[in-house]
Amino acid sequence: MLGIAAAVLFFIAFLLNAVGLATNDVLSSTNFMLIGLATLALHVAGMGGTRPAHRWGRRR
Image 1 (cartoon, rainbow, N blue to C red):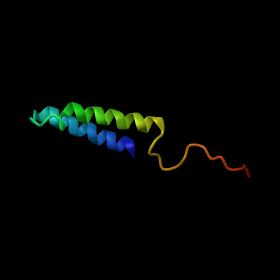
Image 2 (tube, rainbow, N blue to C red):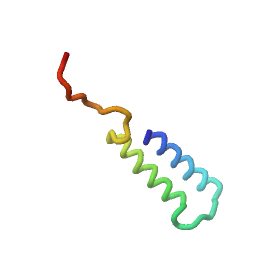
Image 3 (cartoon, helix red, strand yellow):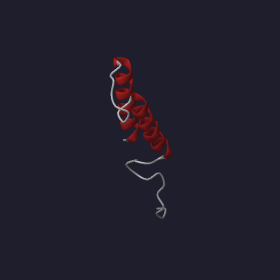
Image 4 (cartoon, rainbow, N blue to C red):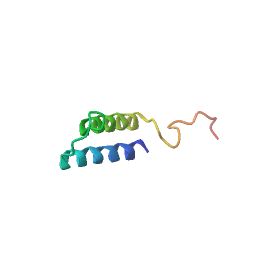
């Protein structure tokens, strides 16, 4: 899920940069890119998954 969010943020950053839209400092394309990198790092680290990576129950 975080991977999809990162892709959306990268696309927004690309659109802002391609159009050359002048926004304030909070909504700049660089900030969207950095937030996208942060969500991508969380995704790669295993956060935001739908199920845990390891099951610690007993074997059957």
